[in-house]
Image (cartoon, rainbow, N blue to C red; front, side):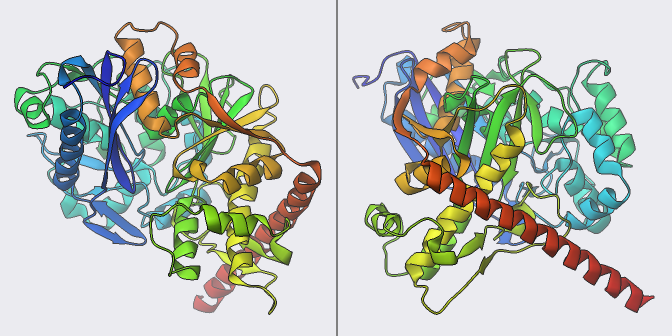
Length: 518
C-alpha cells in the first residue's frame, strides 16, 4: 500500500469519554486513517460512570487495527497514547483489571468532597498539588470506594489512569505518567523532595495513607513506557517492538495539539466536557482549576479549568428541541438560523450545569443543575438553543477572565474538539471573551499533541512548542465585536450574582434541614 502521508508516522490513539479515536500522524501534522469507536460503558447512570477495562482495551485495539490497515505499517515508528484524565483505574498483581474503572464523570464521591471542603482539607492539598481536589479526582473516588464498596479494593495492587491501562495492554508494563499524577498527588519541586514524598503528604492530609503502596513512581511522557508486545503488534497489524509513548493525558495533549503554546494564547477544548486553559510560570496553588507541568519546559505549567459546560449540553438540547434533525449531521443550516437572532437570545439566560457532578469551575457546594431564566411565551426553540450556545461561550469567558491576570494578558484563544467545528460557537466565544478565536487546521488536538510528544522524544524535533506551532497552523480567525462583548459581559455579571444567590439559598436550606433534624 502506498503511504499517502509524509513518513515517518506515529500511530496515535485518544481514549476519550465519548469515543476512542485513532489516526496516523505525519511529520507535517496531517492525520490519516482517522477512525472512531464509542467508548464502552459498564454503567452510565449519573452520577455513576463505570468502564469495563477489558472492553475498553478491546475497543482501543480494534480502532488501532482499523487505522493501521489503511496505511503503510512500515512507516509507523511509534505508538502514542493519550486518554481522559482523572478517575480510578485499578490493577491486580497480575496486571489485570481489579474491577471496573470509575471515570472522571463519576460523581458519587461528592459527599467526600463536601466533607473535605468543610474540614479545610482541599486548600491544604492545593498547596502541594496546585489543584483543589474534585469529585473527578482519584483520591476522592478511592475514599468513596473505601467507604461504600470496600470489596472492590481487596485485590488492587496498582493504581493508574486510563492512558496507563492502555499503555499496559500495549507493552505489558505498568506505569503512570507525570501529568495525571502530579495534579493529584503533588509536584516534585522545592520544597518537596520527590514525588513519593509529596504523595505521602497529600495522602496523610486526606487520611488515605493505605493508598501509598498502590502508587507508582511517575515517568515523563518523553520516555517510552515500553515496546509493543508481539501478539498486540500482530493483532493491530504493525511491527513488534515499536516504542510506546504514554501521555500526557488528553487535556494537556490538546493544549499542545491546538498550537496554543505561547503565554498570550489560551485554548478551549470543546469535547464531552469543555476545558479552558493557558500556560503560566507561577505555581499559584490558590488559583482556580488544575495545574500540570509542561512535558519539556521546567517552570512552565498549564492552568486548566475543567467544566461540564461542553458538548453534553448541546447534544442534550439539540436532541430535545430538534428530534427531527438526523443525529450526526452538520448543523450548518440550524446554526445559520440561530445566527439571525441578536445577542442575548431575547432575554433568555442559560446556566450550563446540566451534569452537575462534572462542573469543576464553580466554587459552589452541592448540585446546581442547568436552567433557563427569563422564559417568556414569545420564546421559540431557536431562542432556547441560541441561549445554550451563549451559555457555553459566557461560561468560557468567565473562566478566561479568571485566568487572564496571570503572567501576561491573553490575546487569542485556540479552539479544538468537536465543538470547534461549530462556526457559531467559535464566534460567540470571541464575542463573550473579547478575544480573537483561532480554529487551527485540525481540531483533533489530542491526537496531534500526543504524536508531537512522541516525535520530540524520538528526536525528530528538539523543541516541542516549536513543533506544535508547525504541526497545526491557524486556519480560521474570528474577531470580537465590541458591542456584543459588552452585552455578554453584562450577562456574565448577572450570572455571577445569580450563582451567589443560589449558593446562599442552598446553604440556608441545608442549615434549616440540619436544624430540623436536631
